[in-house]
Structures are given as C-alpha cells and as structure tokens.
Image (cartoon, rainbow, N blue to C red; front, top):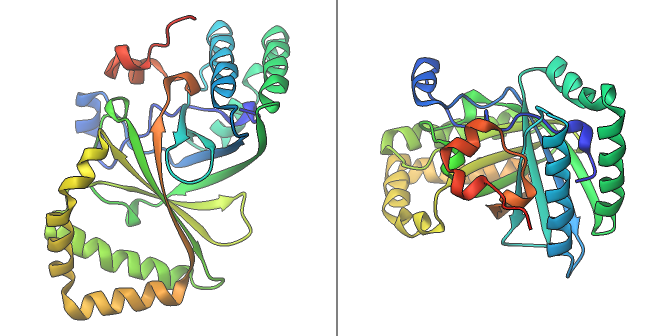
Length: 274
C-alpha cells in the first residue's frame, strides 16, 4: 500500500452499540474519521501484491507501530485492494501519519517495500470519511469475526446532499420498523473526491447471509408502504448521480490488525511465515 502515512487503528471499526455494552464485549463504536485507500492491482499481480503487503505488515510489527489496518480484495468489479483505518480525531490522524518519523530505519525499510509495491499497482486513491451516526443503522458486531464487507458508494448531485440524507432517514425509519437484521455504518466523504460522496459499510460473516434477505427486504418494503416506496425512489432518482455496489473479502495478508482483532479469531488473522 503506497500511502503508509495514513494507516491507523481499524480495530475500532464496529457498529452502533452503547459504550458500556461495547466495553463489556470488547468492541468499540465506529471511529469519527475513517480513511479508505483503494488500489488498482495490475492483472496477474494479485499474489505478488499480497506478498509485498505481508512484508509491509512484518516491517510495521518489527517497528512496534500502532497504526493498525484491515486490507480487503475485491470479489466483484475490477482488480482492486481496499485498506481501511480509523482515527479518533484529526489530531490522531496527524499523529499516525508522523509515527515513523522518529524511526529512520523502519521508515527506510517501509520506503523500500513501498517502491516494490508500486510495481504491482497502476494507481491509488485515498478518501477521508466522517462517521454519520444519524444515517447509520443496527447493533454492534465483532469486526474480527467478519469476513466480508458489502460497500455501497453514493455520488450525489451537487447541492443535493440534504435531500439525499432525508431519503436515507426515510429508509432508516422503515429499517427500524421492520427490525431489519443487517447493520451498516454511513460515512460522508470529506476529502479526496470532487463530488459529494457517501460510503456505506455492511459487515458479513458469510455471503450466505444474503440468501436469507428476501424476507427482510419484503418486510422493509411493507414498512415503507406503497407511497413511501414511491417517495423514496423519487428522492434517490433526484439526488443520486452514481451508485456503486461492491463486495470485498478481508485478507489477513493485506492487513496489519491490532491485538483486539487478532484475539477475535487468531486462526484467521495470524499470518504464518512463508
């Protein structure tokens, strides 16, 4: 991953539980800020890219770095890798960017790996998102036990942010009324793109969860009602420029998880030396 300076603590990524319950269960609420680094992996370079990423994680472990992150590979769409990391504040973001400045040996090693990594990707983009609790839904999950993300990206027409958010809140009311079983976290992108953008993260233990969603979707539509469905469809037609739906699989080889994430499932997250 090219952007070493923006890696940070992603073990905080879980969804929407009260702080007391989270403390008891060992999980924490979504971070106020989240960075999304998306890399375009060259065709046929998937294994080589994973190898350089694993070397990156080993170097960070050796340096006793605290900027943990999760990496994923796209299982739909183009050949891509995605890295996510969370921050408590902008000051925390700055501190994590500068963490290796006091360790020149580690920085030199990371720079070398970064150059090698660059041979396997054709481009990358970094986005910074702000958690929108008011647009998010559901109870908490233990992120270390998850295996997939369904990520929806909405690019909004200029000047239509508020109208779009009203449409989301309309949907939220129906989700709550129908007791929809799938939680999600909403992030508004505040830097890295030229158009208003929102990213929605839905964690899954298995893709098989999608097979059982017909009943839940039917209950959601019934909660909206016929008029509500028409109203929501109109709002999204009027406000959304592009909507993208992608599935991503967590990859231990692309990740530098924190102790809490590893403890959730050591067999999955611990990468054996090759």
